Length: 428
Length: 164
View 1 (cartoon, helix red, strand yellow):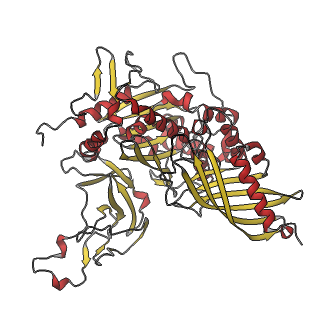
View 2 (tube, rainbow over the protein chains, first blue to last red):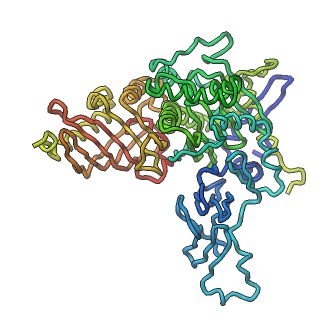
């Protein structure tokens, strides 16, 4: 694989192809682990998941077990969940609140700040042994933007805000749903595997070209539930106008005029008559707080926002945080949560969660078909030696605006992926 | 004696076995006919098995309209995750009537649902059902049907694209 070209990117010839081996070859995944996941900012969790000092969640992020928590001074921290003594995972609970985390192998204990504060039989260690040298390790960098917490295993990484580049504008639009500017992760995790390469979900999560074919049954569900959809305009495949954008550093998004109903704040019959006044009240609050123009931006547009390499903030039928990690070249683990305004009423929260399930998640009316298509693609890719190339040229001949059903944002993803996958200048 | 008190465990078992047979045969319209007019069908998220879908994210939280829409969707060939349809075989055991109240019964049962697809490993969904059954016109109907999957995460089970 190393001697082969991973992408063909020839803008003048209007050619853009991706080598299918990138989605199959175990050596590519090994390189991705080092050259992508070890140097990019990787999502860990949302601050709202650990509201009080001592609150913790344990997760596996890029194959590393971590404790995502709030320390004694209420700062959000990320610790590598491995005992400094012999390596065991220290905290084995999924979530909770703890004064200390005790490794059950030899009983070393760590406080909320990750400091080693208890070593049974400490007098047997040499005089040079100092507990202060053996606190829980942290990733090289941890930073957050508007509640979203990321880590980076590369001490030389650029600051998170620089890394996020053009995505911040879109994160801000999502957060404007909340009157106080505070969104929270809602209880309940969707945690499932897809038997496909992780990059296929990166593409699929903001590829609107597949919507009419893969999600035809979801579109007919909306129609039969009384959601009015216009015929697509000339040159369009979908009922509403939408574009794709590249947002720097491999990030990108779709930016669409809404046609599907939004808990904030476009009522559709699926929400029920009883919820109508509440959706209208939310709309009025948005207008009063943000003005007509910004309120319309928040309430009447949908976005599937990709933060390279493995995070989506999809703001459509509801808001979902979706992150995923490769387990093998043909397998990934997906974690998904619902996000909503902290001060949301019980009625609005219920509409948000119900609307979420019309589309998203492993039991929704759309996501199972996405899972199916990615697994079907992966099965087809076993022919990669005979059929080596993916065609990624939709929209490449256009000047200016690229539609959401074009592929400029996918090309931006692959271009950044390819840059990072090149051997470092001072090859090790 | 209330209507529910006249219902025996054997009758409940027969009813659940019949339901399982309808689902395994993909006789979804006949399955739909077992529902009350206000029925709900739910699959909670694996990390919140005892939650309320109004404030917690579920995998599935259908009211009767959504159940009907789910059936309508699954009957189409463009419900791609189930085209071609999975074969399923359900084992229902440990059926217990926990409560009887008027015409209503609260029932729990264990399930092991084996799902087969072509060129794919067997996926086994293990868990328990929480039913609210109701006697309507002398017949048992389903008012609530909650399938709690026991595994800590969906993981290799992937999606719940069929009626569990």
